[in-house]
Length: 250
Image (tube, rainbow, N blue to C red; front, side, top):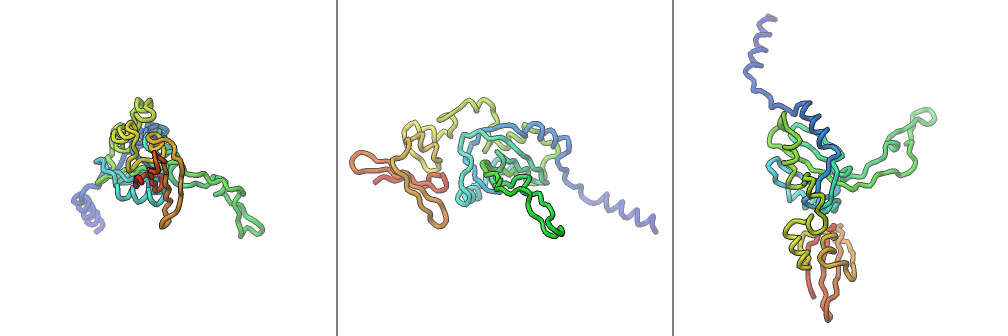
């Protein structure tokens, strides 16, 4: 009876479809050794928050989610900024790449340690001061249609990240206008502001504003930069969470 049961198990295993392979341990270690602490120039603006940017293996950016994160959490990384890969997290069908410590505030190590007080039923944190590290980075979530390839190489990973990160060391020599997307380079040279620019790029194009007006609309930070022109005319550049959404002249 036991022998028959064993045969049934063998037959079932032989007929069942093979499970997709996962990233091998050697491939994972090679990626960690090569990519951790590596630097890249941001090709697009990146948001604060825990979700970051979602990118498919074919190079498609989830722009709807990105816009939502920008409006909700604001911008942490501007176009052209050099960021450092500070952590990598491997899932079955995704790889999360943390940049400059990520986009979420983090508690220090001592704030998570607790000691007993009195009978030991009550605990208090060891760290008494607020040592929360303010977020200054972001994250890229690289999603695969099926599983992460078992033999994924660091070079292939960097190529998949190319729509959002430029790992080419020669690009670090580019500063100012050269680090911007082509359409913004032309606008800056023409001294024009464009929708989608951040504050730094607008300053490169128009200089610092003559006046700033800030307010909150529906929970979103809105800021108008005003540039006085000849006569009584003025140019208004409106930002939402550090991104230009409207340009008008009156």
